Image 1 (cartoon, rainbow, N blue to C red):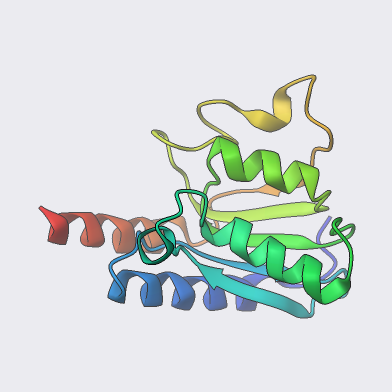
Image 2 (image 1 turned 180 degrees about the vertical axis):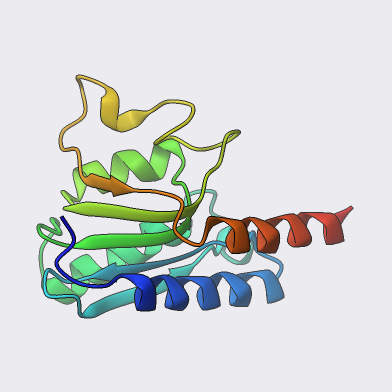
Length: 152
């Protein structure tokens, strides 16, 4: 179970998502917390900016955190992200060996945790984190809906 409050981290992730929206990126933000709750990294989607389909917020945040701790594994760390991770990001969370995943809005179309591929339920999954979904989900869903309405 979570040993510390992740609401402050979700607020940081939400602000990163808002920043992404201002830059024309799908508004997703992520934060990686150390085992004691310290913020190791914050990132937002940078797919359009970098012309890189893999530049999702959680991947970028985990890469930065791994560099900071000097290990390819984030044992004991928590990933806090505004949107249910896609299958690619869920698999990366498993490979990074993160202890827990906290996400905001559910993603019935592109999610890979509670929807779609359900990566952590597969026998081939390397590591299954503790999962907490729906944190500030309504507010985050509104941000996403507003962003996509502006595109139309």
